[in-house]
Amino acid sequence: MTPSTITKTLHLNGTPFKVHAISTGEVAVKSKFRETKLKGKLAPLSFIFGRSFTEWMPIWVWVIEHPEGLFVIDTGENSRINEPAYFAQCDGFTKWLNRTQFKFRVQRAEEIDQQLEAIGLSCTQVDQVVMTHMHIDHFDGLHHFPDSEILVHRLEWEKPYGDIPALYPSWLSPKLVDLNQNHPILGPIASLTSDDTLQIVHTPGHTYGHTAILLRTDEGTLCFAGDVVYHQGQLHQDKYSGGCIDFKAAAKTYERLRAFAKSESVVILPSHDGEAGERLEKLSFF
Image (cartoon, rainbow, N blue to C red; front, side, top):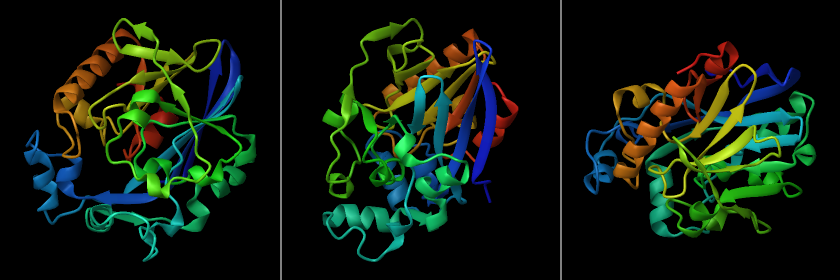
C-alpha cells in the first residue's frame, strides 16, 4: 500500500518550505484505460470490453507551503464514492462508466481535510486549489474548500471531457486561468505566484485543457503532471492511456516534457504513479 503522506523540505532562494504528497485513497482502472496500443476511436473500446484491472494506484494530492501562500494541487477522492446512490444525480452512461470501469478504495480518514489536519494544516488555510483537470478523482474533494480560490484552466472548463458537473459543489465558481505567457519548450503557460516559481502549463491529451503545475526550487523543478501519464515509464516508452481524448496532442505533450526535462533538472510526479511519492522524497530526476 502506498504511504498516505510524504513530506519533503525544499528551498526557494535559500528559504526552506515544505511540499507534501498525500494519497487520498486508491483507484484501480481497466488495464487498457491506463495503457493501450490502440489510438483514436478504437481506444475506448479496448478498455470497455477488457476485463482486467490494474493494481491499486494512489490518488495523490500535492500540498505546497509556498512563501506566497498555501497551495493544493487537485483534491483527490472522498469516501462516499462507493455509496450505492452516489451517482444518482448523473445520467445513465456516467453511472455505468464509473461503476464498471473504475474501482475506488477510500476511507474517511484518507480524505484531504483530515490528512491536512494530520500534518498540522487545515482546509481553511488553503489560499488556492489548482486543478490539473476536472475528472472525479481530482475534483471530488472540492467540497472541503468552500473558502479557497479554485483555479481551473479556461479551456478545461469551457471544453470539458469526462467531467461530472452533477457532482460539483453547488457553490463552485472557479477562477478561469488564461495561459497568456509562452515557454520556449512547453508552450502556453501562466505564473501563479509573483516570483514565477509556481506555474501552470497546458499539457493536452488526457483532456483538451489538461494542465501540469511546475514548482521551481533551488534543488530543481517539480512537475505535478496530473494524468499526462499514469506512471513515468509511459513518458520514456511512448505508451498512452486508452482514456486520451487526443492522441496527437498527447504525443506533443510527451515530446515537450521530455525536451523540458533535458533542459533542466525535473522530477515528474503523476497523480497515480505509485513511485511518485518516493521520487519526491529522493528528488529522482527524469
